[in-house]
Every structure is written in structure tokens, then in C-alpha cells.
Length: 231
Ligand SMILES: N[C@@H](CCC(=O)N[C@@H](CS)C(=O)NCC(=O)O)C(=O)O
Image 1 (cartoon, rainbow, N blue to C red):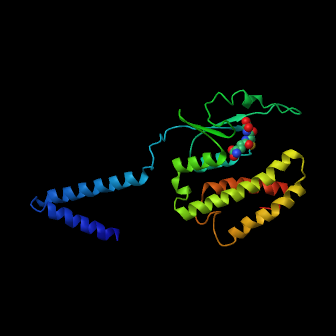
Image 2 (spheres, rainbow, N blue to C red):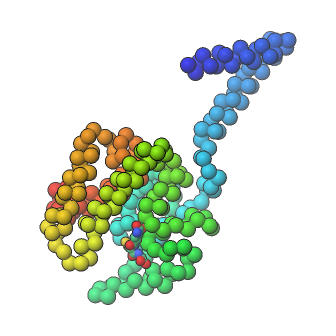
Image 3 (cartoon, rainbow, N blue to C red):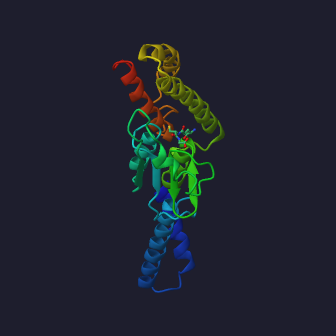
């Protein structure tokens, strides 16, 4: 198909320059085809936005895995060099959060929280899902679904995975034991396992997307809670 298109293209060029000496024709054909290839390559590699690709974003989060881990995984996967700014809790029993709280309202974040992402001078984001979708949209747009149905199905799955994340992590801060937490989580895990067993490679189908990184960290956490049963 591509060879046929190229032949048609060559014929079109030859027709236009038929009066020119033969060595000039060859030169002209080569130049035009090379130029076209260069133009094609540039347009294929050009991202669909005008964001500065030379930035080194800052990810701010506690010095733990938590919600920071999937963001860090995704940045590594997308080959983005970033500054991993970690805030430390004070020692127990108070676990002072001052290292973060003293900065929280000084960074120009619209909705201050952890994790945050600062990309260049102007782009300041919070909310883990928003940050992860932004990373894909900027550095690896193929990791997002854009057609309406896949897009909506990915959103649907996001809500399921986030619900499971809350059910698994919040009780840990409220003194629940691992068994109690897993009793609540198993049916929710089963729903996701059933989906994966329909033959799909990744959570949303055949395309690796940001939610796979989020779920991977959650699966490791559930594995730890369950005593190595989940993974
Ligand atoms: N919905 C937010 C939740 C963020 C959140 O709860 N962050 C916790 C750590 S996991 C925190 O300590 N935030 C700092 C704060 O509340 O000031 C997200 O998904 O990013």
C-alpha cells in the first residue's frame, strides 16, 4: 500500500518535471521524497500540545510509597526525569507533619495536597488521578483512551479501583486488623479479577494505561495485607 502510494507520488513528480534533464529529475525526486519523509517523521513525533518538553517536574509527597508510588512508577516508565521531593513525618508518637504543613500554602497550588506535581513555572497539580493523566497526556498520550466508549470504561474502572484503595487503606489508620480489611476487600478484588479473566491483557483492555500503575501498587499492598495471597 505504502509502495503503491510512493509510486504514484513519483509519477506525479516526474510528470511535473518532465522537461528537466534526467539527472535533475533524479535529484529532484530524491529531494522531494526525503523532504516528505522528514515532514512525516516530524508530524508523527510531534506531541499534540505545545507544552515545554524540557522541564524537570517536581513530585511532592511523604517519604513513603502511598499515593506517591504509582506516580513515581509512571514517570519512570515514561522516561521522565523528575525531582522526588519527600516530606518526612516527625518521630512518634506525634508524627509531626510540619515539614509539609509549613510549605502547604506557599507553593501556589490551587488545591494544596500531597502528592503534588509542579511542572515548569506554571503547571501546578494535585489529585493523584489528575497528575497521572497529565503525565500520560504530556509524555505518552497513547496511554490514555480517547474514543468515547473506552474513555468512559476506563473512568468506570478508575472508580472501582479507587473504591478498593479506600477500603484497603483507610481502616489501616483506624486500627482495623488485616483480616477485617481483607474480608471487605475480597469481593471487590474478585470483581476486578473476573474482568481480567475475560481475556484482557491490561485492566482496560489491550492498552497499558496509567490505571495499571495505580492498581499494581494497590495489588502489592493487598498482597502484604493478605499475607501474600493476592499476587
Ligand atoms: N484525593 C487525594 C488524596 C490526597 C491525600 O489524602 N493525601 C494525604 C496523603 S495520602 C496527605 O497527607 N495529604 C496532605 C494534606 O492533606 O495536607 C489524591 O488522590 O491525591
